[in-house]
Image 1 (tube, helix red, strand yellow):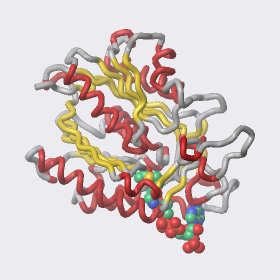
Image 2 (cartoon, protein in one colour; image 1 turned 30 degrees about the vertical axis):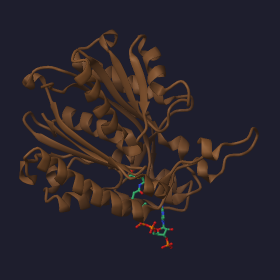
Image 3 (cartoon, helix red, strand yellow; image 1 turned 180 degrees about the horizontal axis):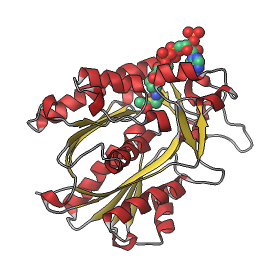
Image 4 (cartoon, rainbow, N blue to C red; image 1 turned 45 degrees about the vertical axis):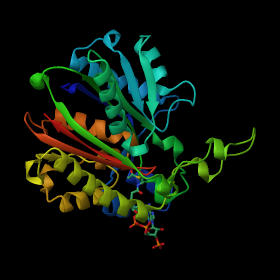
Length: 328
Ligand code: ACO
């Protein structure tokens, strides 16, 4: 049976930080509202001219260095993003060029905030077909370029970041092992969280200004409810499929959308607060990048220890959701 080993963890966040106090100067909001409703204190904002693939390059270099793998050894690049540099070429192809390599299979995966787990599962598929694969799985998002800075209900929630891992085969004790991933979606609920503008059903004519549909729009309360329920249920399902119980879990590392969602999932999952990894205060919701950024921080800071069983639930537009089980 193939072992799915995570060889290195990288993260990158742009230098520019926007605090809640900074936001108070842009929209009618305040630190108290944002903090109590979401747990967010600040977010990083990509610099003018900085592209999604530039950020992916930084997190990927860190992951490759930790893995001790040269970019030229890679066989596949899978990039999770809903904010690629362009429609064509993909962010993965742009990243490949910036890594100074060629020939690898490159593709983008779009599953909104669940994108990283969808990309990781794609990488596991390649490893099953070609056991010698070395797959760079990266998520990179410049969500703030899809923000309506006049809409206080959305623009306070998001930030920009990138996270990466290198996935290879190997022996069970070669490093953290992805034990299982479960993914799901419900397209019938797609309209509850959208970025429609620019899609083929919502195309623009030359010279026409973009409307609010160009930006992230969602029905927060509905998203909240579905996120808590689906993340909890898929965690229970993946544990059951692996003959495990809630009490076997050492760390809950969820998608960072809102502290209240994380807290609600933690309570339903009956996991103590100190075993839940949270960094939303520093980054806001970075969509697909949130999970690999959190993984990299949790590993580098020692929050996750060797031997820990880590469960990783995600939820995002589509709706899409999923969970991964990783043994460190
Ligand atoms: N500052 C101050 N007031 C605000 C702000 C703001 N930034 N945004 C909204 N308000 C006001 C509203 O206008 C409303 O005022 P009113 O009562 O006078 O009409 C009041 O606050 C309450 O607004 P609600 O939208 O009902 O607030 P709610 O408690 O539902 O919290 C939130 C909103 C934080 C978005 C919540 O619904 C949520 O976390 N939803 C899920 C997260 C989400 O949708 N993320 C999108 C990405 S999806 C994902 O990553 C899973």
